[in-house]
Amino acid sequence: MVLLSVFMVFLCCWSSIINAENEPMGACFFLGLKKTGSVGKTKPEPDGAPNAVFSVSFTTPLTDKKIEEIEIKASNPSKTWTSHLETHGSDFLGVAFAKNPSDILNRKEGELKSQPLTDSNLLLFVIDDGLFSRQKRKYQIRVLFTDGTAFNKQAQEASGANPALEPPPGQAIYPVRMSAFSKGISNYDAVGFDKKIQGGNKPNALFELKLETKDREITALEIRNIDEEKAVWDTVPTSHNPPVGVALKTDPTQLINEPDGSLKFRVKDKVDLNLYVADNGVVKRDKTDFRINVAFSDGQIYWTKVEKSPHATKESSGDTTGKNRGTQVNFLGEWLGFVPTNAVGPYPEIKPDGKPDSVFGLDIDVNPKSAITGIEINSVAGVTRKWGTHGTSQGAWGLAIAYQKTPTALLNKPDGSISIPIEGRTQFYIYAYDPGDLAKTNQNLRIIVRLADGSYYQQMVKKGLTTTSSVVPEVESSPQAKGLITCEFRGFLADLVNTSNRPGKSGYLNGTFIMKFHVEDKKLRRVDLAGPDGEVRWSSDPKASVMFLGVALYPKIYQLINAKAGPLNAPVSGSATIYLYAADNGLLSSPKLRLTVTAIFSDKTSLSAEVVK
Image (tube, rainbow, N blue to C red; front, side):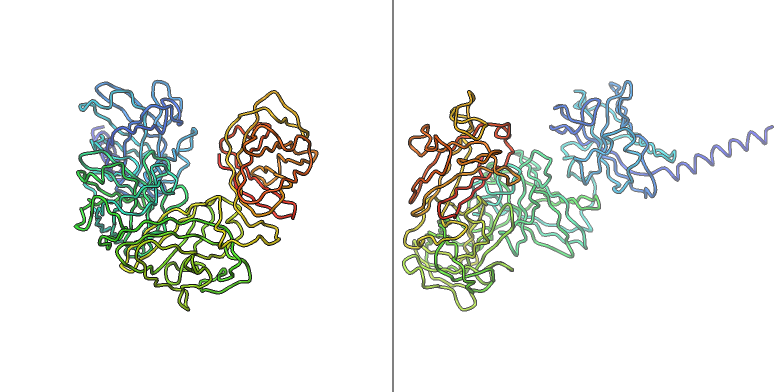
């Protein structure tokens, strides 16, 4: 009997040793509160209240392991959160991989244990019960696996961390080597304060990041203050922080962000990056220190402190490279329309293609004397397109440059490159190949001017409603008219039309559009409004299934020129402002609806534009 008792004790001890060997090792941290919640009190959807965030990092392999349940127990006072939905007496605990914190893995019961552990770093989100600010409160985290093993650990404090990007305390910054510098305020406008990757009409602050690693993919990047004034920017689309515009230092005006601001960029060996952020005044005041956090696809996160560059200035009137030495540059780039000049085509070199060119105007003032060595135009949203003089942008279609006073005498060298001396104010024409939609869409374009000292300057291209008479010729007959058009939805202002295809009031306010265009010697025959599928929904001369569109000429904005359905036959020459009235069938009330307006002329040419809402 004694022998049996000893044997049982031995088995129990041996079992404990085996389980201890199989139990995963790791660390847990309480990262703090997140202002915008990821989960609610009892469900995986946020309810507007802040979340407390914990991290769990496993240091032992998790081969073939799946999680059955995760539980957090708080003491002083007591409280329980669990990853199981609708557990009596417990609040909900959301689980996410650290590299993708917005994707809650357990939105439905049983989903968590079906997820393979592709990331050894987890984030845990729970609703704030109002007591997480207590410093003496303790949290025990228990992770139960489907094979019966478990991980138990008390969470340590890691206050001030960002759950989307912050590394656990003590994490080494190697084998990734990084250094970063603040370069002050640049002259480049890459991003604004919202998540859209587009300029905010104000020069950005510039940070430079040097990074060395071996064949790893960057998936997120964050710049944040570590003292003084609060400031955070990142590339996480689901955060509420302003974006970081990321560009290679070798091509500093071409952002490599995805359209939603996120970042997926593979580093083979080493890379130098320019990081642009919209300054809220913190960078300019130069009293705050920063750090840069970089997350990789393997779940690892590394950071480096930002040093102040000796070349940084609190506000620079010049370039983003730091090479500028007092050069003053002011300029405006504008799309003007079309010209008979046939100088370029869809080729890198200066080579005509037999079609009329589109023309941009460049009005630039440079002091002291310098030389323009390159001009680029590229799209910042939608279809990616780029034009450039030789040597400025690989794969770009060529640009031909001429003084406005001699518009047919090109200044390009035989290979398409330029070196144009400039001092003071000078006006140029820039000829570019039209891909077919420059007149049809309101796409955002950026123009970049490079000078001989290595500096570069940029502005958004303006689209005016007038054209330069000395350049733009009489419009030739073609499916697309030569001219400009814009259209803006102004809300619900008057009751002039109904939902039928005949004129008449409806008793409800109509959707009102203001259309502006510029053409020469035309007759406006018809105006159509099409939905996102391209189908015409409203027309001034509608078919049976199309609703009637009212047309009024400014300043008589409530007097329809098509009180009877049929062709408009309204003569137009130069600039015109037209009010359009459409009965709302439910589509106009949607702020996300994309509409296209088309003006059709009697010579069968037309102009189209996307409606701005």
